[in-house]
Image 1 (tube, rainbow, N blue to C red):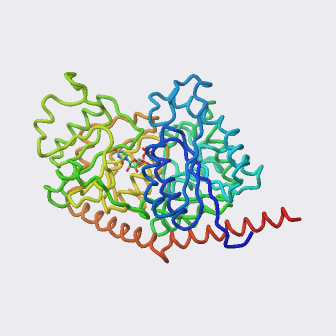
Image 2 (tube, helix red, strand yellow):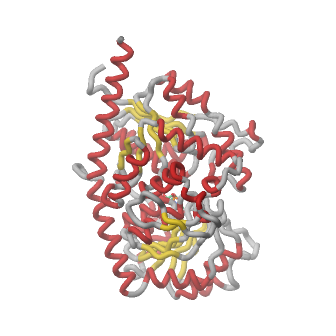
Length: 478
Ligand code: UDP
């Protein structure tokens, strides 16, 4: 085999929208750069996946899909339950993670058959490192978050500063960090705080260990956004990390959502006059909290687009909306149910703020659209992302959520919502935040261009993988 032979990379994302979407972007990027690419996923995602890779495929890139089956029946989940996004309760989520832990043998077969040059597997599949090692294949990890949050997670694992405070709400300074950042145990994921014996605790522990043994980590971020942490993370880990994002910027494609009613509605508004409110694909608030958001938005006097993950039922009164709310908000606020075209919305001139749960994809999309944020973290690593946004980048205002809660989030009162929304939309401070984030948006675009920091790191990764193959082949020859 020669140095220039085509690389074959297998991508294995976790079955949740927030993990799948950036992985597809990454797969398309690798394919467009000349690698042969295979994506492993469940049949649930095939229609979505096929559609999103069609264009790259048509352009001649080699990109294929292989289907795996999550053994849901073995853990007592209904058939067809093949995505975390459809997981209703925390118990069902636990079961889903448990079922995913049984995918090893299927991956084993696939690697044996295809012998790729590299496996890019999601953080939630810690066992993938060992399966890949069996065939001498380098395993790269993909977390789908920023360097800052990866640094927090790594420090908690190695230094355990959270075990040295006396209460969950007592702030402590993160040790060995480029900036003075305070955090509380309440803001850390339950499975980081205590070993509660859950499936997630087990997976997270295994994933940290696997990370230290992996070939390295791919990060969907760009150097200029968080240089101190992009430098710090590989040192903490003792492994390489490549910053190759923002992944969604490489292939913007032709948006067919121009026909979307919401974008038409935005067309009729003044620049920076609408706040977009959405909490990603997993977080779910109860009726009381939605009611609080509704009244808080109304009280702020700002125009808004609010995505609510509730279906409208014919003839059923909606308990989460104040009486006559939608009539009252006519022309002023738009409620979208289900899936919204988030990137085009954020990029619309009329949108001047984003109330977000700080999922990393949403955060990065907001940065790239030059939109300041109201941060309302719920779970996962979202409290860390909030700190990056409000304390380091200073492009957002905290709504005041204090506690990590799987799926539902901490209760936030209407006054806090009203205040944070106003602070992001109006006044001198808002203007400063907007200018800062617009500067970052420019840097993001430069990073993914030829010669930009992310593009250079991507090329460095390809060189590393080719060298790894040469090293492996020469071992085989001896
Ligand atoms: N998203 C979207 N429309 C929606 C909700 C979410 O397009 O109505 C997209 C959003 O743009 C982002 C992803 O789904 O790319 C959500 O990922 P994130 O990491 O922000 O949050 P998660 O859903 O993983 O909690």
